[in-house]
Length: 138
Image 1 (cartoon, one colour):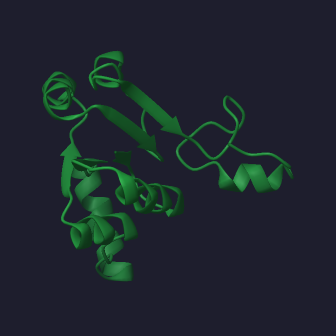
Image 2 (image 1 turned 180 degrees about the horizontal axis):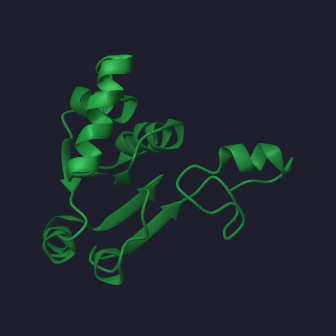
């Protein structure tokens, strides 16, 4: 399951584990580089350390591995998925995954999204769903 976090991903994980084996939660790797480290340092100074989010906490509680996906390791991840996954679920992932990753699981990949695509695309469209007073969502 690809997830950045949030309520949608947490609910999807709770639902999946009822009837299916979840091999891993694939999370985006934290940004690297001097600017990213400076932002992280400033954030910790101003707000203190960030507690583990609900998806990480739940995955740990359920004994599910958490893989961090650096942006340029797509081929390695595709090979890993081909070896262990029948289906992949994308829920609130912050980047568009390349075709080799989407096609790697034996039975395919499902994208769970809070809006009806392409309306309000992006990793967390709830604000725009409410702002537009949509009566239907994804």
